[in-house]
Image (cartoon, rainbow, N blue to C red):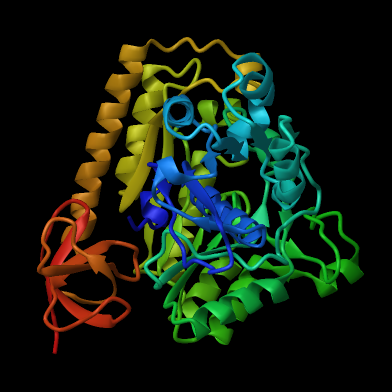
Length: 477
């Protein structure tokens, strides 16, 4: 199955081209954010050099890895069910199979997995993938293996990823790792470590290689892409405290965007995720200057209540957020915007919830990702607050938020009726095999009759109809 950045809520195996000399088989699944899928490409590259080809047949695998997410409890429960499945196969069919956990859950639950529950042979944190050859040697010697040490400088910029879950058209390129923001609800700073940026030249080299191999679109990834900064030979995030000489040599996110856009003018450029406190007008001006940078910004707000934002340790107010969005639209009138929203955060009142609905009505997001709050062990919120919102209240508030988003999505898609948009054909439509599916500049899905086109084509499509999330049209000859 294919998977894109917009479909990263479910796990999936990866299948890549085989090296004839490789004799061992790797089965790997990824869950959670796009960064996890990008990390799996790094892992596959490292293991390819250790004699592994990938397989989509679980029962024949010598090594089974699951790349995990700790953001929400539901993701963790899904991974646990998969581990039960792996171990059943290991017990009943393939006793030589080894099972490992990668990523954020690995770092957080290492003792449980190895010592208490004894359900895996290997636990590898997000910064320890280069240690996989040594860990494999430990496992093959009959020992449990673990490395969850976080790094202050590992970016994997020197690893050429093996492209997985790809249609050969869209690719993910990581530009930062980790996070320094310490939002109280979030476990990422504890599972992925401090934020660090990647050498821009390695980023450009990777993107240029993708272009040579026929890719038409890249998405620059990071927990906070807009806090990207590179200081010519050193990794450092705190721009405010940098010396004037350091600032003179720095590459900011807007400058990196420009470098990428100029180096590959025929390739679409996207980026995610942005942080309101770090987003600058320079980014909007760069987007306006280069037409191959897509007109979409994912700008998580999390809540429409200033009181809740303060409790979340978000470094922006609702007023600042709205001002930023309005400035974006002044510079980029056709820019779409999407959100992340958490409902049911500790102490959230009905007034706080109504403030969120009011903000959504003000912005009218094109689409979004909406969740009930789930307490994550180790976070500041888990230590500081009681999870005091009843589950039924969370469900009801989430339903109201989703319904509002559906209405706003419909309002936004209706604005495209009668207009012509450029669509990058990505795959066959899931609902109609006679139609292609792709996205326009605003990251909205468009479907239209195949009519001789093929994946990878840029097609001008006139929009005739829409749903709340999809545009329906016909190609213009």
